[in-house]
Image (cartoon, rainbow, N blue to C red; front, side, top):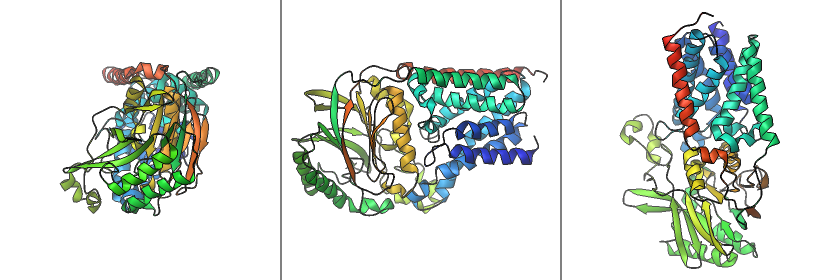
Length: 491
């Protein structure tokens, strides 16, 4: 394919794939957009393929991650983050181009394997990885979502990539393209025939969720922390009776620590007395030269348990290599105190419904990390609470993108998920991904609900598989590349 046409296809492919994610959630665009990249990179020299992959990656990640400009108030960090992620797409395109020029068989499978391998690699490096934009998270409105319970992000992304590779080969009149499309369609149909289980196994719990909003928009919302906590207290007192076993406030609902500040502590104490149930809420704990993002349990006797975020966001919650990056942007000093990483898993034992219930408590961006969520389930989490603060991202698609991840996790691990946001969108998902309640798509609004959620103990296949699928994918990718290095087949 001539390079100008290939570049055009790559750019269009990246833009189309972005449409598969919220706002639009046109899930069927994901295989279409990726198919254009695979078709463009097929048979290209590696240097050209790098350019094609970078073009697709930038066309995809720049609009997908545009919300990051609202967080820092400058465009260079947004471009830098998007470019870093696009480099992984460039590596995929180069690898696939190399394999497609050396081997005449297995191209559709190679494309799917290599895509998932680099997607998983992007999820762990650098700085702990950034899996945002994983193809699996674009499928929460589509029929492939049920496959999350079988193989998690690897299987769902793999099915999308296989369909994309099949479509690309079908255009070339390759029989393997039709086979790949049939296999991917068969897997999706299989997921629909055997949907995830929904029934409660260890009882149910009535959970109240409060989305209190903030008086100002953007990063400046953190400057009115006392007003925000007082607003939550007001909403709770006005809403009595709640008839709930547990109340959930989001991340940063009390950014001034109620355990050490008498005024904020009184607001939380009054709210807990009014609801007559434990409250889970987000706060910050400061130590010398660092701070922790914590989700605490507040009962009649005050704070009795806490979970500290294990995976702070680099460049968002802490600044690596501060002196170096200061030369590129003054925005680095907006993070005046680096966030330290917690060391305990994202689980918390909460006394309610006549017994102690184990809940998963991953905070905000932690919902995107496969290992962290899976660990909580294997440690006994019967349901998930995902508190998040979206106030820093303005009127952007960040909130709905993150919401889709919580929905995916519900199906993947067969657990109800309570997704509580400061400004929206908040929701409660059943273990099969069904929406039990959801706030308005209009951000910066107050909202609350009380929902009865099932508590479950059975582990899905995706949970039990652990890291094995990732290891298998990486081994297959290395073997495919190795085979392409040692042999060259005639087309």
